[in-house]
Image (cartoon, rainbow, N blue to C red; front, side, top):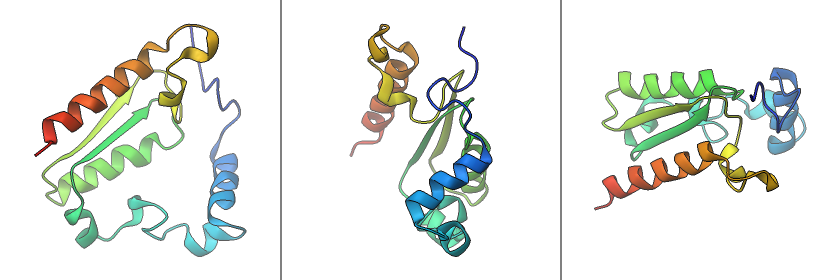
Length: 126
């Protein structure tokens, strides 16, 4: 059984903020944390409506699960024609990159998510 985020053990909101600071620079969360360019979660409605098709793949052990679901619901409420969130059981942040299973065999959930992504993109190709 897999319980919790095996890759990012101990990740919580505080450590998530620390990662955001590393990404945005010192003091970046305070200065840019709600800037839509740092996170589409904070984008104005006018920008969200103009987004192309959106697929959010998130694990239910993901620190930003709630934000992903809320973003999809916001897009839907704004009338975005194609916004989808897929939640994968027992998966953590960026689980896709561990498809090879880190030497323990293939991570089936990652293989499935990548297959789903491929099908999603293929269905939208013009």
